[in-house]
Length: 431
Image 1: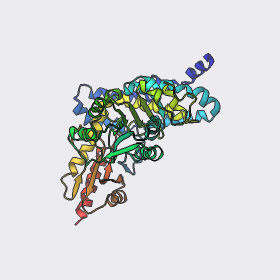
Image 2: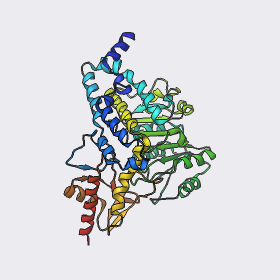
Image 3: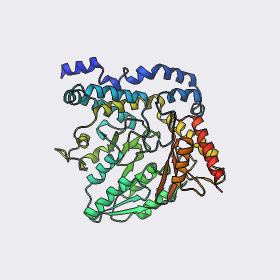
Image 4: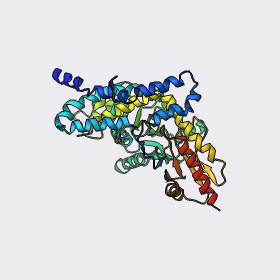
């Protein structure tokens, strides 16, 4: 092991994403430090709106200048430093995959686990690194020991992959899956908490909560739901696909038992990276989604038996965490909410335009739904792209019908001004 350790240190392989010698420091430390010094002492509100500061961060991305990308709720681009980390370690891997991947880069998962644990505010022994929120949450959904008649309560506005997973358990094992149906936006925590509580029966075992409803951007009162659930001795699964890396929180503070997220959304990690958190005392009882030699182990690593995987992507996750930490969770959340409100406030009073997401900070952040009277979401989405090269996504799901618009830290105000002008012109053409 000692020669290998020396080799790793000499080549900077593990240091790459996990030390002062990181790629982030090589590429951005000086310019970011200078930008930070210029806003030192300003109020959080002033920093949120300081375009010179955010301009430095915007330059760290490589997005296509010919498009205005406003579908970051689907997947976010990685900054240059993350891309270069993946490229660097992919080239290294291909010099001899069975050696460099399995004997060198594989050593990087434990430092990454520790780095993610600090960001999540938990023990490294509660973090499993995988490929996306669907994999993380399906691990829990299929790993729980439930029997025929046991009830799970979720909502019709949850993500389809989670809904389908629960429905498969209904078909295979006869569990009961109850879905609540909300009319968002809702600006009353008790309305949501009460709806879950009223649905609880003696057979209820699990509540499934989506932290941020991906269709419309509603932030759910997860802490209050979890506190209520504990009074009824229920466990809570939280889908944090759109909250981790966006909202400023620590996972254990939510009060849930299980949490899954995609890291390639607001954390801007490489596409195909995710994370599973399970409360330490719950790990042993959850079966792995994929086979493991000790499926009843209390070791969180049993959920990482994925077969051959991309070790370069893991190195990229580490650089994404460096990038996140350099901005700061709260500052990033405030900036992205500022960007959402910037455009939405400007269009909300345009005739025929309707905003379908709350403006209150406790109920929304990045994601916002908009419609124009007389147009389907698909028609509005197509008009924005064909005439203005603005990329959004149309949403038609259950009782939600809108175009979803989602900025990120790299989004420029001038691009949002173009969005506002586009919506105004499109709405003006409708009679």
